[in-house]
Length: 386
Ligand SMILES: Cc1ncc(COP(=O)(O)O)c(C=O)c1O
Image (cartoon, rainbow, N blue to C red; front, side, top):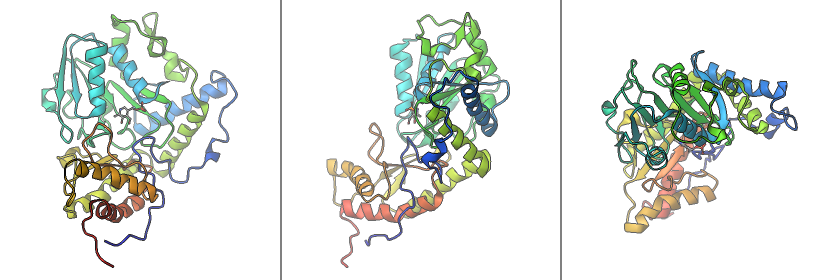
């Protein structure tokens, strides 16, 4: 196995924080609203700009609220869980680490009584037809740690009585989201558009707002989770009046990423860029005997968090075989070919390559020869005497 010559232009394949957009430079932050109150007109306008541009690009209906909230995607999901759940029974879907984390929250922290957990192992989806439209449902659109996503929203009833709460952080801006089937949706800036961690986005449907205004959870809510004031929705949050102080540097960066998304053609182009990344990996996986997607069904295979398992480690076995993907990732990191592509700590040993919209498919297409090389180096197979 000879060492490849051509290197990816940008070795950034981390699943979060993800690659900055092509052409990004720190100078895009030069005009940031810093050293000033975020509640002054200019600061509020910038926060509002993030909301408006996000709505336009994602095609979010005008009667849905969009808020910027604390603590990245986790903050946004927690806010939704703690504020909305408890009014009726809930179906929790989990098929990888993040979904399992939300299950823990609901069963061990909120201690809700009427919870059904519909689980699947890494690589599969639970049986979506089991979801009861009379109940709330909590799910992750794209399971970042297994590379398995729901294929669409057709399994969600249009006339459901329950609410759908969807962690879409590694799907938004790379996959089509059916807004009419979703009631609370979250993401963070650090994922598909390559922004910064810190703040979360929370989208609420009119039905979610109705729940907030008609139901008060039995548990106390800390200030940073509170979406209502005197029983009414705190509308200010959805106009850029954040609950607490945001980073205006992160806000400026988010605006830059949204402008880039618009310039290249909006959501269809973002989705196409991510699909092209998956295609570049798929054609290689299909012709390579020692690697497989962790996602078993092609219809639910993620185009953003592309998770691979190594099925042949040559002479290595046991712990050595299990350690091989990590070593391959470390080697490619050291060579500055691909940063941060080791599988997630709780996932089965493997590789996870980010294929979101900020990654160029020309770079993705250059990875396979290097993966072959790293596999040969670490597993001691396919080595050719020169
Ligand atoms: C599906 C999913 N949910 C939640 C999170 C946590 O996101 P954050 O660190 O932005 O809060 C991540 C991060 O990778 C994720 O992939």
